[in-house]
Image (cartoon, rainbow, N blue to C red; front, side, top):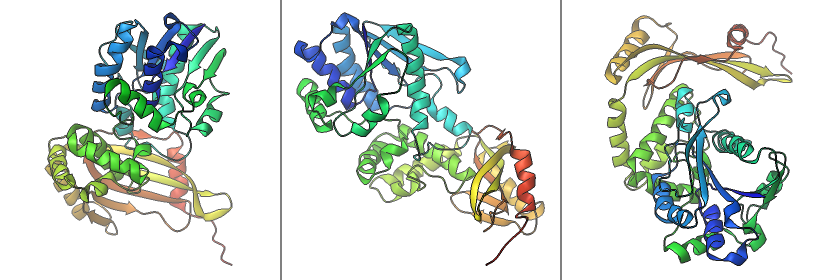
Length: 389
């Protein structure tokens, strides 16, 4: 029976590998039956890729463990997955992926959301691995090893009934009674390095807690490339919707303002933005009303359309000219971190429209929900009846 380890590049699954390959008594299978599978999101921290190439891949190559790296081919599942590497002598960790999760985010001018299930992880990691594992097993039974540790019993319980037919889930860390601290010490004993948390460089879950933010901010200051990727994504998302932000609706930009080395990084980020192509977007939202409360929005349909393109200075001047000469006299001109002209602002009652022209990097594509036109017409009409008690 095949034993397939989902290797997320973090401390938990790294600890499993180091123990398996150093202590024969820790496993009940032959290494020839082990396959290590990796889904590359395209946005993992560079530091993590370097550590994997330096310490883990040489160990896997020494024992000739089959190691497969895959990624999404595009934002559509119809296009399947791309095999980046399939070898028993791994050397390169292809953290650049193929179609990156960050590509998908900037195309639609948003950031990953922390509410509900981790859709970004399911799309960029879970689904590609399911496709790969189905190809490897052909419907036969297999042991699927997942690196949940003792502080993640809830995640284990959710994971147990999931997966492909024939899947037998296995959680070695929980069986061994290991928490994250024990995993980190296991790795340190082998490699003499402290293993950082694995995540996309812009992961909102990694930024959600005070401890996570404290780990992330120094990494951004030390690696401007990763900081610029996260900040550019956030800047575009906030341009399209001021309520967005990578820290649960709050902005990473603001967190860096108050962090040592942050202001200098943000000054460099502004120069980075100046070098990019820019656009003016027409962003419209049609808010529907909740079924039982006109003061609550049910959901919104969005349209985002590029109306002009050029360099940053030209787009700023053009929007200023539009606000002065061509847009309705009641429009509100907002100048600050983002330059925006509000044509419609959301009301106290729903349905209602929201519309603004805004300058931002020319990275988002023209996109509208299928139901947008009808929703927009209804939103412009406003509430059909207001009842006051």
